[in-house]
Amino acid sequence: MPLNVVLFEPEIPQNTGNIARTCVITNSILHIIGPTGFSLDEKHVKRAGLDYWDLLDLRYYDHYEAFLVANPNAKVYYCETRTQTVYSDVDFPENCYIMFGKETTGITKSILEANPDNCIRIPMFQHEKARSLNLSNTVAIVVYEVLRQWNYPGMV
Image (cartoon, rainbow, N blue to C red; front, side):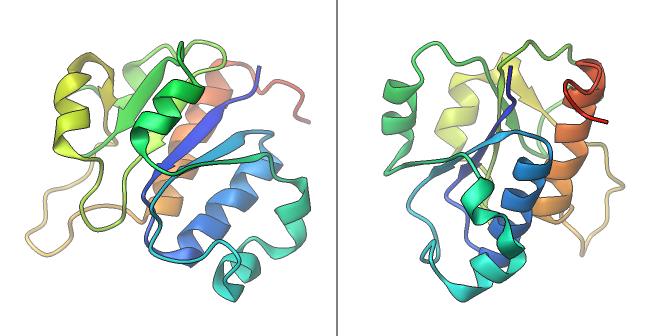
């Protein structure tokens, strides 16, 4: 029952590398929906992921519709800042998918509007100059909440 981490059009290679490392160490599958703002073989992605790349279960999709076709029954939660449901108030089912948006603009508005009941957020202080947490930190927070709910399957 792996957790599925989905990155929607990520832009910063170091974030993707850090998230890949988190996925390996938590036995999660990393799904990347393109286009990305970088090449997946860039040195920055590889450096951030260290020597974990050959251990990663990575799945790439050219666009959101391709992701939906490849995962037709996926229970997807969309992590974003403009919703009311706090991530820790959700009971995450086994084999769910958690989608995180691109660093500058998040998940496309039309996707969020089509899935309002599955949008989640991490509470943050409102600050005029600070918009949100770093993407790789956000992924780690939510991934570990899901795994906590699942009683850390297979982890020591």
